[in-house]
Length: 595
Image 1: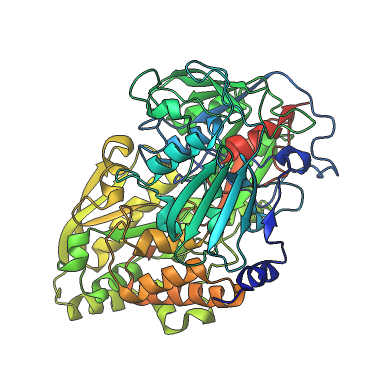
Image 2: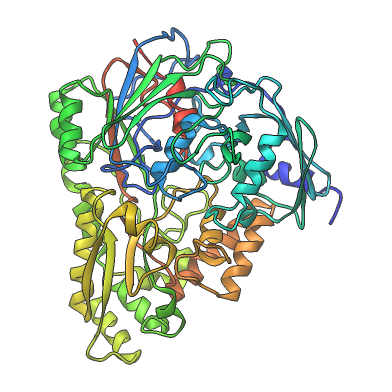
């Protein structure tokens, strides 16, 4: 490997090799609040923050996003349900990850601020002071900030963070039971902790995504060593004690969370964020109830269905409305046995199912496109590919020329779908089971799932429907590939697009269909280490074309359209900033206030 490896990497990204410290709050604000995750973008999202691209009623962004910030008060929001566990290493649910971001720090996080678009957010130090790569990209040295303290709650009692905490957290993150291993996304040979503030990663090959993995709110949270103690510690499945912006106050399952301001937050900056004294998150499973609570002024921010947006704007003309486009991938997938040796082994079956879907009609069903456009609102109608439409730097338009002949498998063509099924040995169709969860992702997702069943039936794929509970069955079994037949769901909105390739095609517990395709595996591995933006983009094009040709995973349109959320008129920084994935409680909420 040439000595100028890392210089080339940053030259490609017009950046420096070293990420130096600096409080996030100094130049960062908040992104819009819309509680999603694996969740629906305009309905039952969950307890993490979404990603706006425009504000229909947005005010002009001030030069200083924190100018005039006022401290105090309670920020009242909602969540669609309870997390299956509070332990961020105990479950892959977006509800768990979103809650974890409030309490636990990461080494890096994503920097939001004026002019930083959703697709352009980059890692910035969180608990880390700096991260420096060797010239050949084979070693990373990460230094902790000296002022990171855990919350002043027993048994941790406000002590300083050290690499002892990093060591036990890293081991837990990479344990056999961990479903989002950092080492699965980057080639780490070993990790050393030479002193109380230094963590050294030695790589088997360079990683183009190292900082993104450390910033990913799905993956690596720093927990105090007391969370892993056999005695004298605390149970992380029942309580969260970290060093993040919000301190544990109370959690009443199916009722609410209360989180207090952390006055010692290391990213508070000179302005002293967080600004709210408390965040109150009401757990309200029913969308209609959440909307009613917002319209009555009982909550400060909430997601809004596209169908309800015109009437909300009419009723609350000064509400701060934010739009966000396509950060959450929806997809059809198959059980591993069906792919390996069963009905879905022949790619023509998978192609036929994809061609049975009328994606334009599904987009209209979910996103009320015509009515909103008639009302003068900008509504996106891009379709997801293997990479979601919101990842504009890496997404390939399924209808565009880059897809070549593979693009035909996205087009609605029931006649050809029937012909493909017949050619694959199912002239009279086939029977299977179709599973999805209907009690977490919301009406948009549910409507599209039900319509998909009808489309599949029309071409001969007849299914028994299994509507599953999200917490007890879907996220713990089906999402992990433990099911029979066909499933439909949302994929995690990864901050780094290469994580989609890693999730879908490498040897990890969340390879949903256990796809073992050498070509796709090589693309995923090459994309993780390729430092040239041009070459990396070519790999993403190749991956999306090859998946379309074989339709291992069938991308859909739920999550691809324009989703909406609203905040009361007095919530500052409600629409001006963006972030990715589940980190909003740290990257967003601390920088909001009422004024």
